[in-house]
Image 1 (tube, one colour):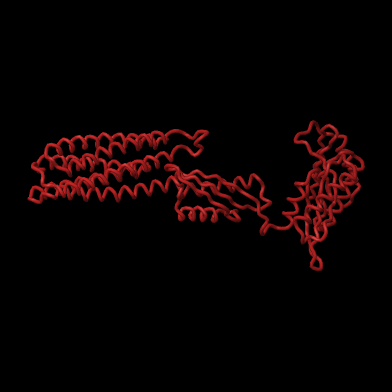
Image 2 (image 1 turned 90 degrees about the horizontal axis):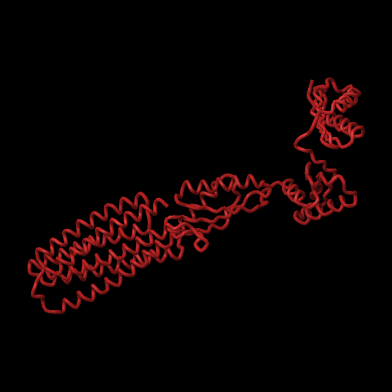
Length: 452
């Protein structure tokens, strides 16, 4: 927004300067009967009109995005440049026609002289002033409208120099010099205006540099965790570059992680390309993702599945087998739970045809609340009695029993001989958990074994 405001101020200064040049050149051109100077004054008037158009375009571009212009109003700048280019081309054709017509006519009775040179010198000063302020502004804030007005200022300077050259030639007796100068001026304006028309019309058709698209693709490819870069759609609206890109991430990537990667991609692009607005679309890919992760993702998304763990795959005689533990609502019956496991098995084999067989271990799911009420001391004493029956337990540490409605959350710390195998420790802890559950209903048990 601030940049658009600065552009309008610069264009206002440029407008006042070029309109004053029009008045001076027209008056001195009429007094001295210089076609070159009068032609250049008409060019200055036209440039004033173009600057007005560019000024209006810059002001309209300040408007924020709305329901009908979701990308903003930056394209109005390009439209203003196109209109200015067309206007310059038409007037250039008129200059060429008038110059040829004058060359075929008798020499005028009044020839240009001192007044014409004074008018030209004033305009040169104005043109240099405009070129300096516009060039500085473009380097700081950019903008299609400022660039268009900068080109106009350059054309003004060149055309005024040509006009003065023609006047000088007339002074030394070459009476057609003034008309030839106007003819050259018209040709130069026609070529430059066509270039301006082409450039701004291309901007209106959303043309974008292939090198810029290639640069964006390279930035995304170099971003960590991006597996593949998909479609990249880019367009320019005023000074803002909009990019809509698609990236592929590992299929087992969590949503939070995917969002983090997308932010990283967006920030990397904005570091390299200023004034850019980036939209990231991410999609999953299972290429090079471990088979266990894919099985986990398939199973956890089946309706009725409350949790998945202990996923493993193994091969035997060229065939792949899968095992996993699936948790379901503890209140449903075996028939309903088995139906869920059948769906899980079908989905896995449908998505991964290489799997020969799926073995599913069903478990009841017990939701653990985030907060509990009070400790249950009686339960802790009962657990201590159970633990004391095992000579393998060398030391009983902390026992925490938290009660929530009909659920007990039990955490146990106990020490075993440090030389026991982890398999033996696991068997013991599983046995202890089973024994505690036989004594205490609806218990969620966590045993933390420690070495003595």
